[in-house]
Length: 180
Ligand SMILES: [Fe+2]
Ligand SMILES: [Fe+2]
Image (cartoon, rainbow, N blue to C red):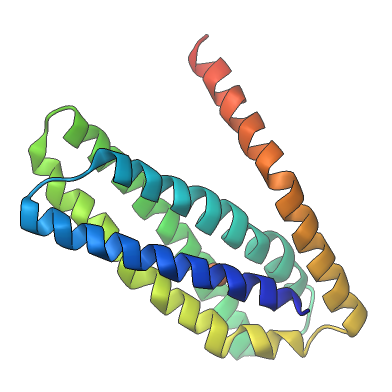
């Protein structure tokens, strides 16, 4: 199994979540309200699965090792674009968290901002995924030996294995800090 296969399998689940988010946008637009529980679930999925777990493996393992290679300018350019897109995705989640907080406090004017963030995600993720799947992942593999590819995959499994522990350590540390 190639290290990119694991990332591509994760792309398929992100795509399924995008379909769910699109349906919720349609419902919000027709009924003029949001389901706060759904927004929390969407934020959780995007932050934990799409960003920490998936983008985490891309940035901390694949891109890290690609930076050590002599890549052609085109691939180097795509790596920079992908990192920028990940950062923009994080900003949109922060905007969504803030807009949802306002909405919950009674500011119904925050609804368009919530919908804008959700729409951005449903637009951004499919394009970002297509760029990686069709124009980036496979050409990148040419720069790694079989042993290096095996090591990358092993590190990805290791990353996933440690993630749940890291997430809860961070949560408890944040709760402890907030309660001081
Ligand atoms: Fe990515
Ligand atoms: Fe990806």
